[in-house]
Image (tube, rainbow over all chains, first blue to last red; front, side):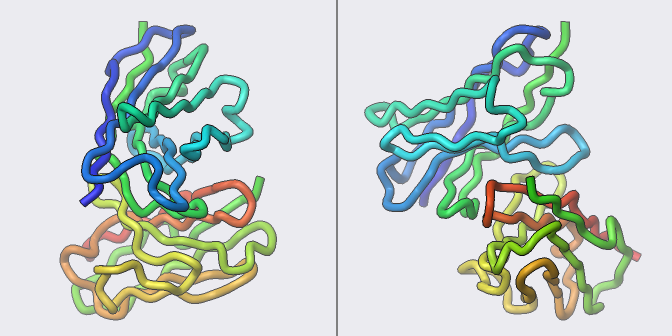
Length: 118
Length: 106
């Protein structure tokens, strides 16, 4: 049973960089046809796709976040990461890591709340 | 960007009711439409992909239909565990979610 677990700081200062890691258990990053990605959800609001990465390193980012987002993969550690630069209060959200197949999200982490505040 | 809308934004229903939620895309997305269910404090759960294919383990009271720009999610007989928020998602071009439909108890 594949499980994904997010980790990282719960509080980030405005203008700084948000960094999160997703660790897999019960499966590996080189799973056939799988992309690994991030989705966020501001408290009480809807879902927003951030981006995803294939185990080869090819990435796909939401155009609205493209200039601030980097997703990377560490296959040997069975984890992938999100970096979001120059954060503002609008980036406060629950961040989910996920497994995608052709964009369909079949597996989700439990989510981690990141608050942007001084 | 493809804009996704859902209607209604919320509805009240009773156990045993038939519930229909609509999702509309701003342009033709063929059948690249998926549905998710989210209960409070939990991650979303995939219900239906490719407009009408039921994800493994999802009860058969859930069904999806539609193509191009208009799609529906139907719950044939609402159960207590179905009170949740439902999101549609297009994956034809990019990856965009609808704003959600909250189903609560009448």
